[in-house]
Image 1 (cartoon, rainbow, N blue to C red):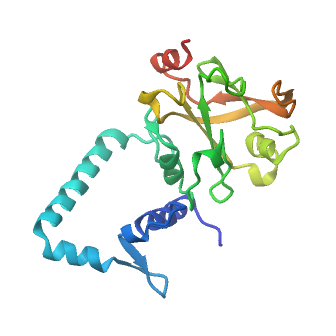
Image 2: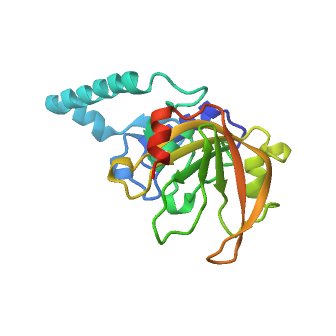
Length: 240
């Protein structure tokens, strides 16, 4: 694969969504487009036939597209920096991957608290702020509205490639973009999505710690948020 810009990765992502190949369970029977032998794309012939022959379907499809465009303008026009995210809007794991332009879809278990996508050089950090009683004691915590302490996966050492990605220690990692997504807790029915808190940067050096349950090594990261969390959302997330 050649070198692509962020926008080109998003085009690749979009074509995979429309052709039903973005998800691990390929949904080709729901494809809107198909790739031709020469690499170009054409609209699914059954979709074309349905639009041409079924007036009710055509009207419903038109209304759906118009509604989606209006909602996008209302809710998502004020995008954050060069991203397709809006500060303090809420997103699912799948939506984050699509909007970052990833070329394949990972399930939540494979992502864990974070996953580094080498193609787009993006690393979304996902945090469930309030942990379950029997959960592993990850001490993710806000120090202030613009400072966060987060814990790596384990076992991990401070010399790991994970730390390279987060602290941008190598030339290849210099342009990495790290974005923060936080929800109160994963069982809160109201917040199956994560609030988007913008870009974050790791400061100082990773500090190794021992996990009390397994005695594995992990490391702490001190992140600085480029935009302090809005007061009402900060209070909601951090309140006991």
